[in-house]
Length: 218
Length: 218
DNA sequence: GGGGCTCGTTGATCTGGATCAAACGGCGTC
DNA sequence: GACGCCGTTTGATCCAGATCAACGAGCCCC
Image (cartoon, rainbow over all chains, first blue to last red):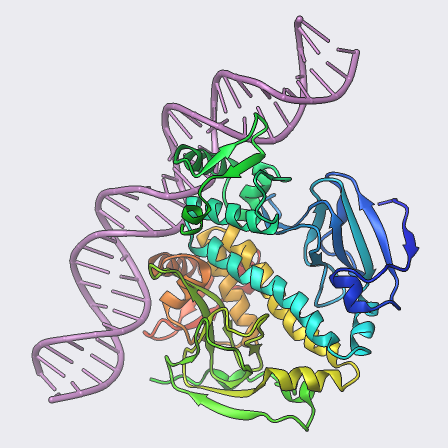
């Protein structure tokens, strides 16, 4: 991971900077498509916020089975850890820019600021809430429900665009939803056949949702 | 027959009380077996810490499918919320005593105390860490692996007793592991047949783990 | 003591999604 | 343009775990 780091002060905008205030050092960092941001077990020095791009965080079992915990999009923060080392691996799905700051700085900054605890707590409980919702999906939903839930989630997080351009592969989606890539592909085809969505062009990663309400009620 | 599962009481050394300091009001509350502590969607006024007993937190789908997020034992805290309402239901599995305090009080107390943010953050990230581990289990482990993981988790949390007295039913375990109760029962019988565990008496809820290492490496 | 619970185990069968396999484009390289 | 490499779709088959069903043990209440 030998990418140059430009350390400088950032203007207040977005969660991380706003939380920390002007006094705290943030630096920017760029990752190329497919590169690792940090690995499971590495020491956790920084907290990250995405300014552009997309990141996946996952855990691996010894035999290669992979579970993606979450996809992170611009504005999202990740890398909060309980102890001193990361509990999962983070990788850039596409070219990604991040803003990073030291864990310690965040805590200090938070303590010296009224209301800071509440905002910091909100960032972490947002991750927690997502994890809780995802456990329900993984434990109790069918393949079709999982894929529909995924589409609705991504649609909302991308701001309900006319055309949704997914950055991740079918395999990534499968590992996120606890399925195989074939099952994801079949579920998408089923939804297409039910006129709930449409593929734009031949690339299969651009999807237009045709009836959001019906998708959502799965 | 009422089994006392708190013989291995872990030091509750002041998580909630220490965090809050002496100034903050805590009150105690007792819940009978099977009663609801709070429901999904209710307003979230309090944070809870168990002093004795066991609690399950779950989400429900409209058709009755249930996913248990976590089992909470003495010393554990739960009820942290992002917004103003609970995202899941909490119920006492057995007779349970809790210490409760207002959300707001915790935040205030934390802010007025150096190092408080860090301890509070740890409590929440502990929940987050558990959720992340559980997603891997739900998304990518086999039935036998799930049950083995569950046993190892409970064993550790109960302080590795000679004899483990599980407070929860097979259905609770199944809804926690994303399985059916029959599959849980079969997995336990398989492990018994492999001499990895033994049922004590006829009640089936007292289990002695015979070879912890082999269980853990599943 | 007996009826009616609840809880757990075990057996038989079914099925949703995994696995194995093939084929199709798009894309980059030579 | 020909080739190989991905990523994706689609088809055929398989199987882990769900579902359906029976039964037994413990417990409560009358």
